[in-house]
Image (cartoon, rainbow, N blue to C red):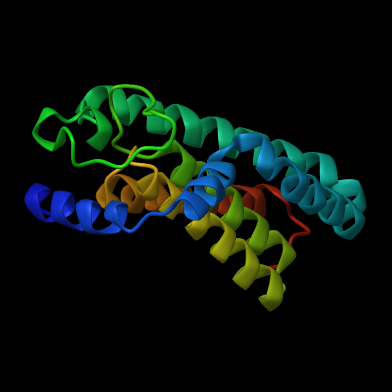
Length: 183
């Protein structure tokens, strides 16, 4: 996405704000808020996979670690300012409580991690209702980053793709290494 278009789309999406949505989006971006859902996923996986649960748990942990470190590496390599740090956008970016985050934002770690867990867990759970819910969950988390003024749409889109690809890759790794796994 060309940078100017990305900035314009960001300003459009970021400008649609209100005190009510400030609270909701700020809440959705807090990592501890994700814990109950992720614990429920782990419990479900434990009940479904029983003896294979420890392997699946380690696959999830490794996938999140790879995703998080990959996003950090990309951020530091690309060095693209977050919208809230971009001098050209000074005074135009809506932030909540002055929270901006680190200097660089490409790619969004929140989007990468939420889509990583979403894709990996839906591949293991394989229930349509769950797939819809977890993709909506990851999308809301990702959108919240634009709303809060800390990421451009391209940061979120590329972070989502990165996380999903790593999740898919780790699932394929599981299938290859587990002789009894069904596709």
